[in-house]
Each structure stands twice: as structure tokens, then as C-alpha cells.
Length: 380
Image 1 (tube, rainbow, N blue to C red):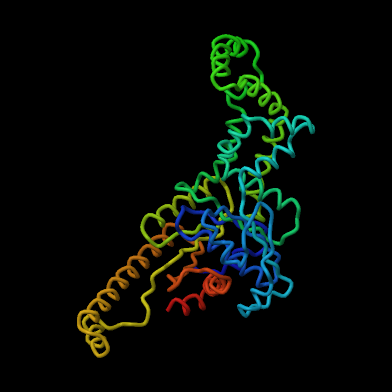
Image 2 (tube, rainbow, N blue to C red; image 1 turned 90 degrees about the vertical axis):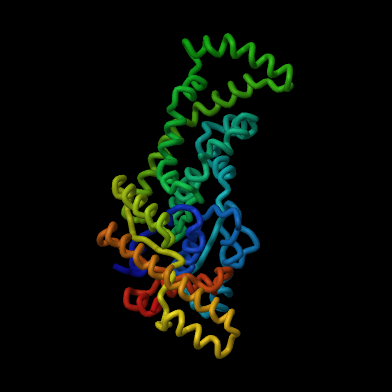
């Protein structure tokens, strides 16, 4: 069953592109956002992409932790009339987002500055931000609440396990509610005794060696952080609610090889178990059969008319290998469709060149936004 992305996103304000790393999530997210903007929507795409391919493809010198608008002239140069549509993009900085979250939840100005300037916070904020996954959702929620866009497209952080994204709010709550955190936030009774004995000696030794009063930094950090626990818990719950609402949808992006297909099926099942809205699957870089029906020997014979025998044989062999990949991809997509009965599956063919500009993104849109009949025609 195939359906266009336009139909998948009808009535949606949040589109989350999920899946394992290396399957083209960033490019697909950018293409979806560009395609929706080309159809008159005000769209923002949020990503974490160390290679910064997104900025390059959108003609932006760089992306930061706030949105930047893509020059409408680039759409015009690509032959696209956006009408009232706008495309904005940002590259999430997890540390900066964590700092912003602290500013929001701090009880007062003094507490905020104590935390942000605390050496312990400066060290653990990078790690605590489990952080890319949770902070991606934190930023998503923040921009959603502002209500400035018709659609937000989130390119989930690169991960070997796509479920890390879904589990991020739960992991944050476990950290906040964990016994070790509570021991420091409320160091009374046994906890106070523990902190008062051996740790005191250990920290005094560390202070002599390093010159840093570590116990003072720890005490200050957890004392200031204790007033924010309720705010973090409430926000994590709201983020979970946002992901589950009808205005949100998950699109799973995968490749056509065996492992990415299996991961897509697994992720789909987990979304269903979690009661989260699922829109469909985008299978990227699909090898298609093409129009050459002759055998390898026939192709080699025709090629010898313009190439030497050795080169002609290699070209024909390459074509045969490509056909084998096309057959494998077709089998895997049939299996995918069977395991996700009734799920929308869109195929994006393997392109001759990497996407490096807006024109390339619009080429992908010829497949993402085609209806079922058009998609078959393009793939053939």
C-alpha cells in the first residue's frame, strides 16, 4: 500500500522521522520539510547531524540552536513556487538546550546562575543530556508550544538503537527519581552519615591534589537542582503526551537491506505497543529493475560495439549485480509490507548522485509526494 507523504501528514503538526543510523533520515527529513513548504506550509526541520549535510543542502552557511529561514530564492531557482510556504531549519545543540531548560525550571535567578556556573553541572550536563534524544524532544516541545509553524519535522538523533529516542523521557525521570540523586538532594539520615564520614576524607584529599573543593561544588549543585526536579518531571510527562497526541506522527525511515528492514519492523511494533501514532515507512535507496530486459550476455554483446571486450564484460556484470540487488530489495519490501499489514510504504529509488542542494531534495519529493500510481510510474 502506497500513499504520499502529503496524505500521511494531513492534519499533523509534528512529524518524527525515526530509524537507525545511516539510512538517510536527515536527507529524508529535509526533503519532507521542503516538500511541505513547497505546498504552502510554514515548516521547521530540526536535526542533529554532525556532517552538517542539512545546512549544505538548504543553502545555509551554518545551523545553530535557533531556526534559520531558507532563502525563498532557492525554491524559485529550483522551479518551485512556494506561495505562502516557508522553510526554516535548525541544528540542535543538546548542551545549549539543556542550559535553556535549566533557565526555565530554576526557582529564581540566583539558583539559575548557581547551576549554570557550577563546575559539576558543566561536566555532567553534556552526559546527562542522554541528552541528544531527550533534548531533541525538549526543543521540539518548546517550538511546538510557540505555535509559529504549521508543521515541525524532527530528524531523530543518529543511534544504533532507534528506541533510545522513545525511552529518553523515561531515562531522565529514572535519573531524577533515582536513589543516588535523592541521596544528594536530601542528604539526611543514613545519607548524611555516608556523606559525613569516608567521603569527607576522600574529598579533602582530592581538594589537596586538585585545588578544587569538590564537595562544595556537589553540595551547591544538588541543592540548587532540588528545586527543579518537579519542573523536569512535569516537562518530561508533557513531552510524552505530545508524542502520543493525534497531531503527531512517526514515519520510520529505513534502507532496503535485510537488517534495516528488520529494525523498521521492530520499531513499528514498539510504537504500536506504546500506543504512539504511526504514519508509515519510507524505504530509501531502493534498487529498481529498470527497463533493460536483456540478459548479461546480450548486453555484453551490444556493448562490444562501443567498448572493448573486457570493459563491456565488466559493465554487463555490473548490470547483473544491480539486478540481483533489485530483486533482493523487492523481496524485502514485500516482506516488510506483509509484516506491517495495511501500513503505508513509500519507496525512494537509489539516486545516481548524492543530494547536496534544494534541487536534489525536490527530486526526492517526486517520490515522497507522488500518489500510488505516480510512484509506480516513476519507479518503473
